[in-house]
Image 1: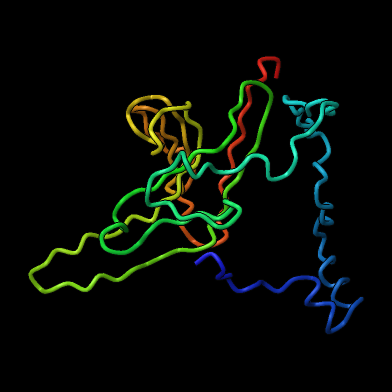
Image 2: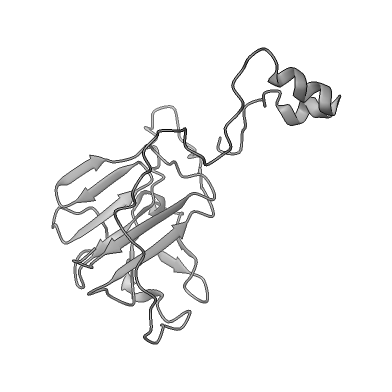
Length: 203
C-alpha cells in the first residue's frame, strides 16, 4: 500500500521536545562527526556535472491550454470521456472489463522537447461471481502511455513497431521488444506516468 508508512525512528527533533539543549548536546558528544547539511557534498568529492542543459527560453507563441487533448474520434469504442476529454475510463461490464482501451491525442510532435503525464485516479478490482466449475480469469490492471504514428494501432505495444510506450508494470515496449526499465509502479491511485520526448538532435 503506497500510503502505508514505516514507524518513524526517534530523531533529534523528537528529542528536543523533552530537553532542547541537553538532547542536542548529548547527541553531539562522544567524538562523533557533526552532521553534514543536506545537499552538501563531503570535502574532496567531485561535483556532478549536468550533461543536459535547460532549453533556451521559448519566444514563440505558446499553445493555449486545452488546445491539445484526447481525440474522441481516434479511440477504441470502449473509451468513456469526461466533458473536456481530460478524464478517461473504459467500460467495465458485460465482458468489456477484459478488453484493452486506447486513445490518441489531437496533436503530433516533429521537433523540440515535450513532456506529458497521466495520473491514475481510480483502481477497479471487480470481483467475478463464478460457479465451482467455472474458471475465473483475473483482470489485468494496466496503464500504458507513449507515442505512436498517425493511423497506427490505438493499442500501444502491438508488434507493428509504430509506437513506443511505458507501462505501470515497469516495462518499455516497442514492436516486439519488451524490456523492464524500472520497478513495478502498480495501479494504485495517484500514480503518475510521465514521458519526456526529446526530438532535439543538438541536446
